[in-house]
Image 1 (tube, helix red, strand yellow):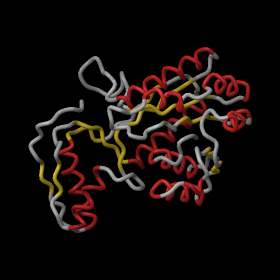
Image 2: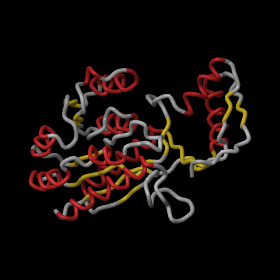
Image 3: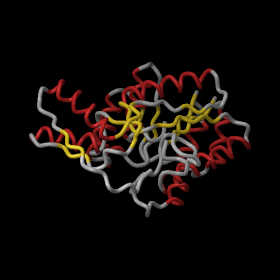
Length: 272
């Protein structure tokens, strides 16, 4: 599994390992170079028995050597996400990193007896999620994910190799980078009201532990029935305002603290 140091990758690898699978996680850098929340995730995976391989980025000679050794399933979860919210996101650099030596990967995967490849997609991609048609890519990052899967699909088709896709919505939960839920919690712990500036946006929020269970089920199914398939689980499809109020109720009842939320009038709609 590539990308195990990421938020969702950590939960996917952890859940697969807990269900009795042997998970091998090649890392882009040395495990000791990871700091902050990413470092915590890597350290916890090591404690849980996930086999971490240092300095084996996707598509590198070391990675292809690993593919030659074979496995039941190759889970390609890694993706370049730095600056993913920006219109200046480097689409081509991300595509290059996400698909490095893809031709050789599928060639070696077929030779070594790997049953299937599962690529992680995103609702940010063109043609994914729901809404008004055409479903354009959400952002330059979303476009990079679209092109990534298209290129992987090309080489999978060339080698007549089964490629499946697991599409993730908007996960939240423990070990996440500081984002919306982190902001809400910090406000309430400080005893202040959390303000939501974009309450009208509709998002598909799902707890990461449930997403990981769905992923593990998908991997187990595809390891036995390798026919190509696209699967996208869903969580709370609602406005961010409604989700913030839901989150407030659940956190307030668990921590027994006030969780006031103020929904601001939304005037800016730059995102879909």
